[in-house]
Amino acid sequence: MKIALVAPAWHDPLWESEQEKSIFPPLNLITLAALTPPEHEVVILDESLTSIDFDEKYDLVGISAMTALAPRAYEIADAFRRRGVPVVLGGMHPSTLPEEAKAHADAVVIGEAEGQWPRVLRDLERGNLQAFYRHTEVPSLENIVVPRRDLLSRSRYLVPDTVQTTRGCPFACSFCTVSQFFGHKFRFRPVEEVVQEVRSLEGKVVAFVDDNIIGNPAYAKRLFQALVPLKIKWFSQGSLNIARDEELLRLAAASGCIGLFIGFESLSPSNLKAVGKSVNRVEEYKAAIKKIHDFGIAIEGAFIFGFDDDDESIFERTVKFAQENRLEAAQFGILTPFPGTPLRTQLEKEGRIFNNDWREYTINKVVFEPKKMSPRTLQEGFNWAWQEFYSLGSISRRLGLVKKHASILWALNLNIRKRFNHFAERLRGAGLSFPSPSPLKQ
Image 1 (cartoon, rainbow, N blue to C red):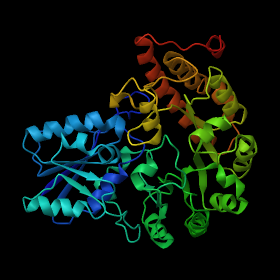
Image 2 (cartoon, rainbow, N blue to C red):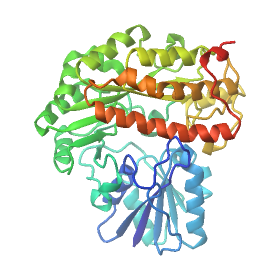
Image 3 (cartoon, rainbow, N blue to C red):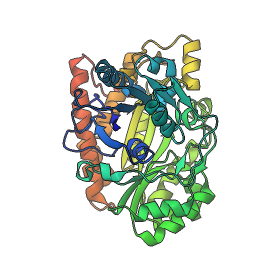
């Protein structure tokens, strides 16, 4: 069979790729390609880089989607099905709402693809495709396939080498979909298999796309120790806990860690407790950041606006904190009640969700009623935070010219600034403003 695996494109100016390059390749799809028996031909269609020819002849189309991309995934699926091509949907959103997805697909894979995808292909060949495919238990990460990177155009990606070492997260934040999709058990690959895969990569900069690469500190230490001889540079996502374990931090730096995406989430202990992340201790933030910086590791901090304890002062306080602690980058998000999360259950029960258009679930749009401010104030405060943090003056004060990897960090910040300015133009066109924080507190 000839099989197309499709990654729908973002159509949101803060996240969408420019046509020339995208940041990361679709690791899920090239892993799916590796799970496909060799007698079948596989084509990767990354819509962020290429237009989809719906008249191309395929025997099967597989599409993976997160919530914000689900409407586009459904449009693509419907277009192929109108031409008689069978479609299988999978990924986080179809796994959470399989009945919704089934209205646009011949089959829905619920959860992880290992063990299910070969079954889908066998059933299709026999003319016995089932409506739903789901695991009775989560798959082991031992001896997992090596992704089909040969199917990618490396030059089209800023960071073409991505590797996954673990799945899941030891935390269970009420707003996060990770635990719902991967289960609450934190799983990891044998260190030897990860090292073997990293050795096979063409480049020397690797993105480990784990949700929390230090979720199991003992495993992380073994992994980092094994990476030291490879002399790579890498970045990933991890928790602030790394600052509490100096050996772990030292090994991360020695193994080539140049940056971590860290979820601070909030400056309010009551917010952190309410959403199940009291492991974050606000009083330790400043010292933890300094400790990580002392080991030459950059930090992109993640902050969420709209928690129940947030009032109109949260925007200025958060940006000031990120600037004073010289975070190399930051991602500000609006609290979003994704399907399947405890947060959504709570807000639905309280009748506070007013928008169920999945296109708006991009973490940069308000879709619910906050407790201590209006939806418009939350949106405008979010807009102001991005604009202020990525102003040229702010970038200069945070990065200067002597910070380690200064040229890379300046390029990252200027790229984000460009994306936000594009996003801001659309919002201004919709009548939303970007006030300074002072009016927000009146």
